[in-house]
Each structure stands twice: as structure tokens, then as C-alpha cells.
Image (cartoon, rainbow, N blue to C red):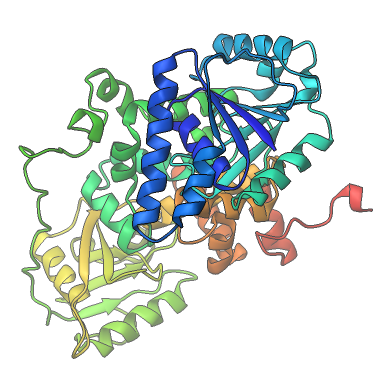
Length: 512
């Protein structure tokens, strides 16, 4: 296939490298001739590096470079061009002008694709005389390594184009998912679940960015915590995406932005690229503050309280602590000196104190989510005795003989604690994508694991917990906070009620 790529920036040159390596002839052009030269040099350097590392042979490199055709004029005629991929700046008028000029220059048979990440594909296509020939083809940076592409049909896109683009993408070795033309498409929309909830936790002073990031990594198993991720992406970019998706979905509560971001963006605290974001960067930046050492008494008696419906969680915690040699009390209530640990699921330690008549100064919440690493989370209420909290932390840090001690994060008591709220939001936002039919359940999980690097797709992640238990978590968070952002989604509710998996698309009226 002969492809024309318009725009020789980071995305355009990445797409050019990927397509030329896969065997396609690629015309690379830009309104700035120097950008085309720089992009061709970049592609050459990347292919030479691949040869040096043994990932490509010299003849294959030479063949790929022969297929890369720098073009002086983006608007030149091209009777053999079958596909145009636009990768210019994210501006509706600019993209409309580019496609308008291409429409006059190229044959009607050429398919047009825009690499927009945030603009409506339908609005871009509406500027064309023939809007049926255009669709979205959303790549992720760096293109050769991010092996997922979103295929986004506009409202007028010809029916055969999405299938043809899917075949093209998968023939080049990437995976393709078909996504409805909605704000944020799929991956950027799904990613809002993690960062918006992390910002909400910070608003409520549940923990600082380092606390929340450690829990996200060590309990949920994420490669990067949400604040590390925002610093890498750029808070200016993240804030703009959060706002545009929230506004595009008519201010949906589940996608609500934080008041924390606008001032930080205005102050230039964008992350790595400015040297300071949620963390400081660069040679003069102070080293990250270490976690506070565990200083309490690990031999203090501990009583594990089973709140209503949490008997299994309490039994598992009691067994783990007993196996580590902790002095775990039995019976119906704690002794006068014991610290009380309460596994919470969408609820708080404070509610357990009120509902169970527990000693406020010695009662703490514990997250029962199975951790990906050796970290437990201790939730402290405003009534907690600091000495008792230090002892409770020491008890939780105990390990069985021959094992590494547990790291223990201490956070402010909140309904659901940190990891549960992050996971609940990730699953809820993905469930909202599924129930709007933005993408199929399997495509949601595929795109999120490939595009965001989560250990599991969000719907499959919910299934690992169980649809019924996820519904219980959402209901408990909604009941405890009264905040509509935690309202259970129809997708999770129905599947829990019907015994279906969250990854199961189920039967639609069209099937009948």
C-alpha cells in the first residue's frame, strides 16, 4: 500500500517508521521542509539502532528506508495513494484545512484518517465534500512500541472503512480496537478513573501523592502511581484531557475534575518537563522522602473485628497475623489494651466504631484487598491514639519467619480506603464505557492493558474481585459519601444480579 503521512512531528515520524518497517511505501510530508528532513533522519537512526541491537537485519533496514519517501509538497498529486494519515497539531481548523486541500489533490478512492486524540472525528469530516471517506486512526506515542490503535468511525464514515483500517493496522503487527466517536475515545476516557479518584483522595487529605502512589503500585500492582503518571504525561495535558472529557459527557459526576489542578497548571508545575510537578526532578532536586520507620510494639495484643458481612476478610487477616506470630485475641470483643483492626469494604473505621461500640482511640481500618506486593494499609481516624496507631502499624508489619516484613502505609480513614476507591473508580469508568457501547468489553480490556499498562483490563479486574463484591463496594461508597460519583453503574448492577461476568457483553435486543 502507498500511504501519505501529513505531519512530521513525533507522531508522524513514529507512524512512518512503523508503516515502512511493515512493508508499506510511505510518503512523509509537512509544510516545513526541515521537519521532513529531521523526521527522516530520526527514522534512519531508530532503524540503525534496531540493527545494532539485533532486532532487525541490515537488508531489512535498507529496504524500509527505501520505502520512506520524503515529499516536498503535502498537496502534491498522488494517484497511487490509498491511505492518508494526518498527524498535525490538535486544532480543528488546521485539520479541516489539511483535509480540504488533500481532498482536492488526491483521488476519491484514497481513505483519509486523522490521528486526533481529542477532537470529534465527525466534526473533522464535516468540513469535507465527502465526509464518508474519513475515520479516526488514533496511535499512541511511541508508535512502534505502543502496540494498540483506536479505529474511530465518524457518524458518516463508510461502513467498509473501519474493517479496512483494522486489517491494515493488524497487518502491520499492532492490535486494533473499534471505538465510538465520543470524548476521549477509549483509552484516554478509561484512564480518567485512576487520576480523578487519586486527585479526590488528595483533596480529602487521605494521603499525600507519595502515599497514594505507593499503594497504587504495591497493592494494585500498577507500574506507576497516578501522580507519577501525571508528572510523566504533563499535568497541563492531563488537566486538559480531564476537563474536555468531563465537559464532553455533560459534566458526568463520575468524571468530575479536581480543583487542585488549575492553579498548579498556571504555576507551571507540569511535571518532568518543567522540573517540578507533584515531585521535583533534575540534579538539584531533593531525594524523595523515605517512609517513616516502624517504631511501635509488634507484640501488643490485637483484636480483629468482623464488621457486618466482613467475616471472611476478618478471618483471613486474623490467620495472616497469627501465622506471623502476632498476639491475636479471640472472643467477642477486645481486651482493655488491645488494638482493634477492622477490615473495611467501602466503609470506614469510624463507622465500625459507631456501629460496633469499639474503642475509638484503639480502632483502625485495614484494607482487605489482596496486595500485589508486600504492603498493607492502616486507616487512622481523628480519634486515634498515636501510640496505639504506631503499635497497630508494627503489628501489621510483622512477617512469618524467613519472610520480608510488610511495608505499612498510614492514611486518613475514609470510606473504602485508598486502593478500593482507586479500583472502584477504574472499574466504574470502564463499565460506563461498556454500557454506552463506546467499545466492546474485550476491546476495553485490550486497549487499557496495552495503552495504559494496567496489570489487568478494568472489567477483567472487576471480575477477579467478583461482580457481586464490586457492586457491594460501589453501593457502600455511595451510601457512605452520598456522592453521585460512586453511584453503581447499570453494567455492574445488572451483571451482579444476573450472575454474569463484567467482561460478558450479554444479550442485546438485536440478538433476538
